[in-house]
Length: 120
Image 1 (spheres, one colour):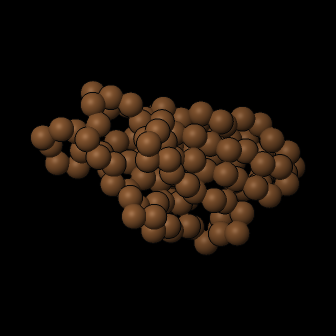
Image 2 (cartoon, rainbow, N blue to C red):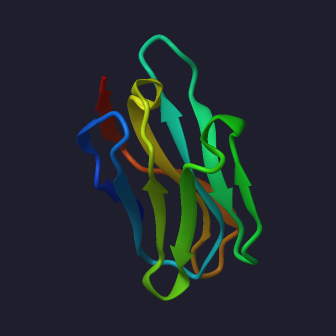
């Protein structure tokens, strides 16, 4: 079994900061790409930021310059530092990762999500 557990969400005022964490646990052999998605009420889930095992990073245009994704391979954890938050950043944030277990191919895993609410 592999689990992704997010933490760090909450309520913050516009202009504030939050740091999300996503820890992968279980029988893990390797983690390829990992990232953060978000889904606001009434909207489709969208990519926020992603990082490969080699360190290549991709951001949504809406968060460039404000959000920073990073990962600690030793801890199987990916982070999302969110600065200068805006009300439109309000959403449930989901962690995603491509993980291989011993003897298996990479599979796509999702966390259950953490709510980020930005008040104006």
